[in-house]
Image 1: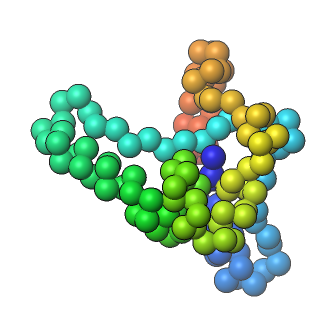
Image 2: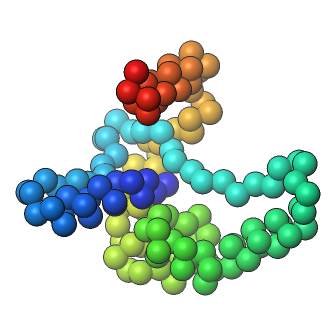
Length: 129
């Protein structure tokens, strides 16, 4: 759930430029790949206990809500949702309705050839080559 802060940055810059360009995020009616962030501790992390303490801290509802309100991303922390800015929690592009969520797929479910093509295309976009 949620979408990239890059979309917000582009939207804000377009508004500042007052050039009439509107930038918004939309999920196609056919569906799309699900977007997720992950907090993980590498197996060889030198300080796993502190890493877990940090993750536990970030999962506190008031902390998770504060982060979501700041970055304007969704949170999977259901206890944090009531603490969100109502404009954020009511934004269907951040918190899609159930019928939209049902059309989202996990990228890992893509066949290997599609994953390779996605990486190739993304590399082309990033490098311009």
